[in-house]
Every structure is written in C-alpha cells, then in structure tokens.
Image 1 (spheres, rainbow, N blue to C red):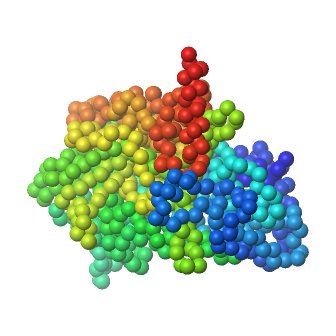
Image 2 (spheres, rainbow, N blue to C red):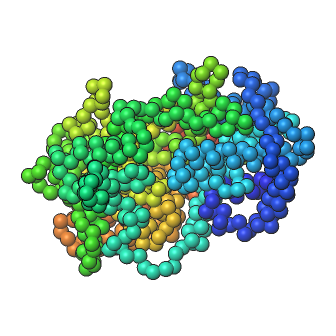
Length: 634
C-alpha cells in the first residue's frame, strides 16, 4: 500500500476534514511521516536538491499536467501561454549531496515543493484568504502536508528524478475526488466542530458573524467600508473626530464621492500606493528559484477587468445593498418582539429626497435617475485567485492557465471519469449611468457586482472583478433580464435569500459562514434560477441536505415574522418561492442514474470554452453517456 498516496489523498480534503477523519488513518500516516522525517533529519541543514530549467526542452515522455487544448491555443494564439506540464517538462532534478539515497528523493521533493508552494501562495493570496482557500487547493500550510498542487507538480518531478517512464496517458491535473467526498467531509467536520455554548444573540450578532458582516456591508477587505476616515483633531485623538465612510443616512449627492475618495485614501495609506486608473494585477512574485526556477505567482503582464477605482465603486454599491438587506434582519427582530440596538440604514438620492430602506428601492432609484441595470446568472472557471506564470530568458511572460478539476462520479464505458472544471457562479448585476461615470481615459466606466455565498462567510453582493484572461470567461446560464419589474424581483430574491443563509449560519455558528454546508456560490444562484425559470443550469450543486432543511426552516421563521407587516408583502412572496425552490434543488454530490440525464446536461452548460484537454475529453464522455441514457430509457 502506498502510504504517501493515502496521506496525499487525505490532505486534499482540506485542513478541516483532515482534523475530522485523521484518526481513521493515524497509524499508517503516522508511520509514513515518522520514516520521512527520520530520513530528512540527516539533511536538515543542507539544500539537498535543486531544479535546472532547460527552456524549450521537450522530453520524450512528458508528464501531462493541465494540458491545454489545441482549439484553445488556436483561439488565443496571440497570448503567450505554457501548460503546467510543459513547464515541468523543462525541469531537470539536480542532486546536490552524495549522501542522498535514491529512495529518499521522492520524500525530499514532496517536502521542499510543498513548503515552497505554501509560502508562495500564502504570500500571493494573503494570510486570511490563503488560510481559507489553500486546503481546497491541496496546499495546506502545516508541516508535512501536500495535496492537489503536490499531485500535479511533485508527482511529475518525482517521475523525472527516479527515471520512471511516464506511461499514464491521463492528465494529472484532476483531483481524484468527487464532490460527494468533499461534501461529506465538510459535513463531518461541521458535526465535530458544532459549538454547544450559549445561544447566539441574534438581536445583536457579533461583527464577524455573517449577519454582522451584512451590517458592516462587506467582508474580505481591509480596509473596509465600515471604517472611518479623515484627519484626527490634533487636540483630540478620539476616533469620533473622524468620519464614517458610509454614514447613516447615506445621501448620494453628498456622500457618494466622499466615500469613494475616503476609501482610496485608506488604501493609499495602508498599501503605500494607489493608482485609481490602474488595471494592474500586481507584480509577479518568484516562487522559489532553487526548486521552481522562473515560476512566479501572478498573471505576468495580465490586466484586471476593472480599474482600481471601479473596484472601489463596486464595493460601495455592494455595501449599500448589503446594509439595506440587513434592515430586514432588524425588522424581523422587532416583529418577533425583541429589542435590538441595531439601527436601520437609510439612503437618500438627494438631501430632500425620500428615505430608501430596501435594496429594491435603491435599484429602482438608480433606474429612475437614468441608470441602466441588467441582471443575469453567469458562471466561469475559478482558480480562487491563484495564478502562475513563467518568465523566459527574453523577459517575456508566459501565463499558465490553471484549473481545478474534480471527478463528477460519472464514467465512460471503459471507466474513464467525466471530470469537470470547478466553477464559480453568481447572479450578476451590471450597472451603467451617471453615478458610474467615465474612466480616466474618457471611456465609459463599468460597475459589475455579483450575488453569491462567499467563502469568506457572507451571502450577499460582492465586487465582480477578475483577471482579464481567456480561461476565466463567464458563461451566461440564463437570459439577461432587462425589464425593471424582473430586475427588482431579482434584487428582492437575493436580499431575502441572503438573509436566510446568514441567519442559519449565524445562529448555528457554522464554520466559514456555512460555506460548503448550506451550499456554495453555485447553490445560491441555482435556487434563484429555479424561482425565475422553473429550472437551473448550474453545476455542481453541493449543499448538505440537513443544512438545506435548516435553511428552509429559517426561511419559514422569517416568513412568519414578515407576514405580520403588510409593507413586506413582496418579501414574503419571495421567501415562499425561495423555500419552494429549495425543495426542488437537485444535488450533484452523488452520481445516481435517476439524476444523470439532468445532471449531465447542467455539467455541459457550465463547461468553460474548453480550455484544457480534460474538458474536451469530458465533453465526449458526457455526450456518449447522454446517448446511452436515451437508449436505457426506451
């Protein structure tokens, strides 16, 4: 039995799942770890191996690692790209010590590559987000663990170092896990981690809770829009001498520009520099010149889809919508007869204008003031912000299109798995008009935001900006909505949907705001699609059944409270439809014949424009299976 493979498989399930199930394998993995560390003690103060890159070299039997499809390369021939396997094929392992035995080399490569990638990705993604996302990427920031990145990079290098001929025709880029394995792991961890302390005070939730984040207006940013700005009084250093970035009430004609400029000043102060017109994704950072020469985290000379000022503006719109949505929480507390110190957030377009206290009222005010708004559910491949690029001797950057592939659970006649690209989806809202304005070059500015449950732990509206690269291109999952009536309905559905999710995750104190339990980004969009169209094109849908039931119960609680207030009839109608849609939501954690036809159809609809060879192979398998299912049903 390959104990290192068992170890690698376990940690790909994530740091949390590892905590829950490691007892099952403690003896085997512990013995493997003991042997590895004992060997490495002798090499503690040395750099036992290095890698030499031979640019342009093509090995006779290259390892396949996230190979790009020929059609994708042809469509984007003006963009300089490497596959990960192409880069790894150019590396040669150089042993620097005569004391190293051949059997020690795989262990040394695993240990060193793991440490290098962990450090690089933590630096690139940031400590907070990195700690949340690295377990899913399979690079866990703890001693002696590796995962998905390990299986792709270390595995290929070990084959080269030991002289093994690459006989596996399958791409190493797919994680050998189904969504069911991940989902069951998340559920198991949530059971082990379930807090049994005092009841949560929903009348005044903790600021870091999902409901608390809604009251602030955003999560995952530092500085954030819940902060204050401005110079302190020299005679009084009290923070009260500064101004709220988003005061209450928020008067658009007075506070809109002030909030944006205040946030820009905070960013400039905290980061050291800030260019409002920049679309730079930042300077690439060398991973480790000794182990992975010329490999950088970052997107080379790639650009963001939006300028820095546009992103700041996105965040302000999201903050306003999320805080207006939080007003429903305050209303429910009062309707349930509870006292709360929380204050309703209001917006005015003009100082003498009417109060706006609901999200759809704000969007209607934008429409009435000459703005154009479009809503559409869209999906795209996700890399969670992780990116790699290679710098060649001529100084040119070559991007490495990443993708995180899982097994769907469906297989071809000959046992080949139908793998899928892990996507991100959301309910997009695209806004243009007077408040959005122009870019520094005079072109029309863009405001693109998106509703979903974020891994940082809050369901709500978030800025929709990405790297402007062809392997992260959105796919429309449903027709764009342009009529005011439809748009306002979507906004209300998102508001009460977010409230239901944030209520259950706050009250049950679920880890990561319920992400992976009540669903993920995809699930939050799928349920809204079912309300709007009677079906969904989202894949995969991965909620835990018991936590979806809890979400439906909390939606019922909110519905019962809001039914007491006739001014909330639109909201109660949306809650009824959302609760009904939850009961119709498919689930892709298990590949069952009864769900296969519908699940495979959604899988095809979510596939990106066939960037990697894996996606082309999956398309063929899915299409063959669809024909089989037609035959089986006769």
